[in-house]
Image (cartoon, rainbow, N blue to C red):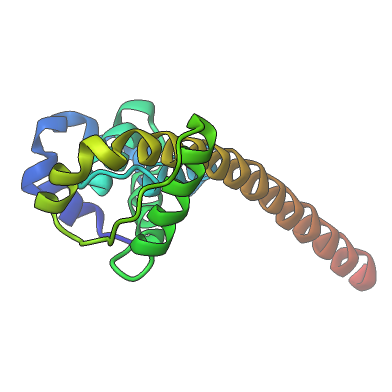
Length: 165
């Protein structure tokens, strides 16, 4: 997980000011952590640079767990971006009813700006749909997993108490 002191001192996050000093952003309790997972998963599929900055900003404003939201963005990384964004582009083209264009992915802002008119709308639509679905799925799965973990923890504790008592 990213270090809180490092994130507070990061030059690109200074505009958040005192929001970064809210202790709720750094605690691993159920609600902020599950919401941070979901927000990070959503922003992982945003097809723009600075996904971590977007996730950190949303987490700070909405009081989600900031390190978790930032860490989840790394699901899309230089190795996974080409296939993920190609599939989201194909989904977006299908949803918009437009035939997919042939193109090769290049990991650069120049390429993205040059191709924005051609592949932009399908890529954006597909990425937002996948991001929302992945965010909702992550929220539900993390919530259920957290609940399952806590219930099992209490059951184990109760078994140990009844066995020793």
